Amino acid sequence: MNEDEKQAKIDGAVERLRASQDPEKAAEAERLAAERAEHDRIMKSNASGTETARSRINPDFVISDNPNSHIRHVIGIVSGKGGVGKSFVTASLANLMRKNGHGVGIMDADITGPSIPKMYGLHGDVIGDEFGSFPMQTDNDVEVMSMNVLLDTEETPVIWRGPVIAGVVKQFWTDVQWGDLDYLFVDMPPGTGDVPLTAFQSLPLDGIIIVTSPQELVSLIVKKAYNMAQMMNIPVLGVVENYSYMNCPHCGEKISVFGESSIDETAAELGIDVLGKLPMDPSYATNADNGVCYMSEVTALDSAVKKLESL
Image (tube, rainbow, N blue to C red; front, top):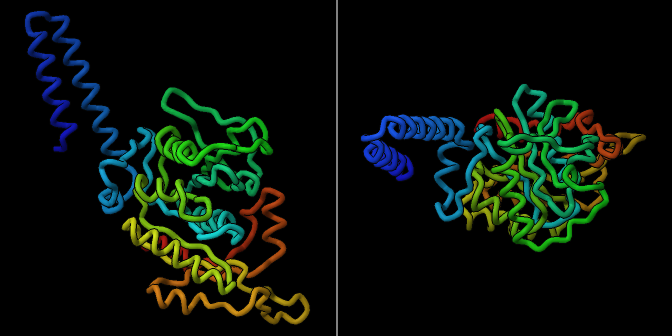
């Protein structure tokens, strides 16, 4: 029994003692005690994240689950720099896991540069009730919450300072009714700033996947993201290299547009797995621009899917 449960029992006993001379007050005290017990039962049964992931959270940074959320695994998708296709990798992983029959959601934590709704063709107003907002649902049944579905228009800029942006990410956890999910992917903004820090400190992450591209500079960027995760005691599940190569449309030869990759050497140095090398495929961009990213067959992420299903 934790301290909150102990205090709830004490409070209930005190109220019943005070009301012992008044039957109406006694009945009210019993009713309140029963409501508290039911609330505690629901919160305990709906505790999101694995026990191991929850144990890594510092009590000073704990944020409450929404009572109508039960999320088994929370996976962060990060990159040390922008422009590497992190959101596309996030959506592709979500689509593949959904295709395999898992309940899947995406928390678009890139508050100032959200792109997930566009990739799924999501528009319209978010609805909710007294327990919080409901995520929007894609055509392939992935739950999504993003800043872009809360703005007046998709072109409205979010001009906020870091602490306010980090607060929105917390609200996406506490105020959104995610329901029963096997995997929630958190698409984080690039870098090692306020939002990744908040997510690492406050969400029950099973681990992160780092997204990168082949340029030599990227090995440094991968190491920055890796070292931040190590400092925050968050497991690194592996790395995905996007824009790894393209296939010649005439002869099928692989062309290394950004130069030869060094991701295998970097991953071996850090002791992490390479979970996929994605080609440059014009159809990926076309489907994403048309709001049907789930129609892209991203078989290069099969190793990442196996890794996630092994958690």
